Image (cartoon, one colour):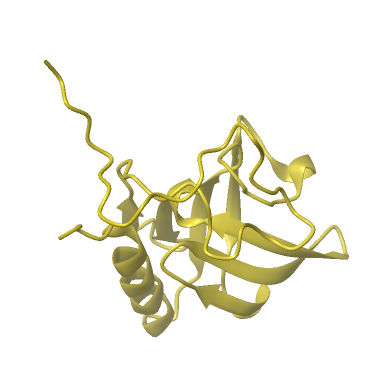
Length: 140
């Protein structure tokens, strides 16, 4: 039995807690991660901080593998695609309370193969794992 990554569950819970507390949810994203789609002009040192409040984004979807939403940057619309593995932290803007995430293993390919019009898995990216296969290696 494979253990599921904790990050999607913790992320959803913290997002809900921040919203229920009438605070502003900010996230820190590794903008250089695989399949990440963010406006590159706002990336600093390979990272970007995003406001995920309902006033800042539309159509927010927090799934097990990816967070997606539509937003505006510099007055122009932009669709964000954030694989769960790229999320480094979620916190309340006003208090700084939240959580940094440890590195976890995630499948390299998203269930739909990546965002529409965004980066697609190429020949150098591994394909989906066979059922029952493990990420562990035998060391002798």
